[in-house]
Image (cartoon, rainbow, N blue to C red; front, side):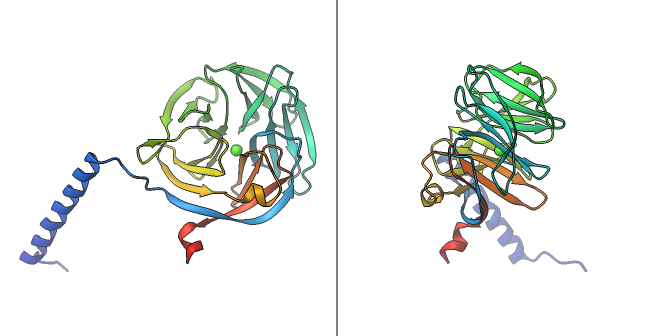
Length: 268
Ligand SMILES: [Ca+2]
């Protein structure tokens, strides 16, 4: 069936085009406001977490949690039983290294260090050290998107590294509207987006992997206080098989499975 464009329809189309161009020109003149969606959370499950773990890296794979801990003299890589919080396997770093973010890359686990510009490569099963690499920035969070390692260094930048050579291939600046957002810490790649918790704030930013634009904020206010934790939120893990999110923090006695709840739904 064909439609005839009437004079009225043509006029409506012209008005629409003019409106769009006015909106576009207004946006170019004014600061771009945040378009991020707001989420809060619901606690689905609570699990024990080693209160001595100064959590700096976290991911979930093969039915286990993997955790990297920090502080000089207390830095480890560990495999943890989710239900009991029991540490099943562990390697310690030398005193000179402050462990940071961890990520699973095929048969290996990569661990960054804070200010020593060195990353360690372990066998994912035995935790045997296979090698290391260097990078120029501080090391904070780390995740893997299937093609690149993605790392944070406490600034508003995220760096993409080749997983074989560990050389930087590109970087993005993270912004909310056109306001840059720094202190990006622990990371998790989830279904095409990068989740980043913000240092010393109960917030997770959900970041567009191409543009660096923040798509959503997850407000975790109350989570640590309600459960007697004093350390800062740090640690996001995702189980893609059952769509479960886990979060914890530095020296928190618990690890939480949370569900994301759109803010508008909570208010109604
Ligand atoms: Ca993580």
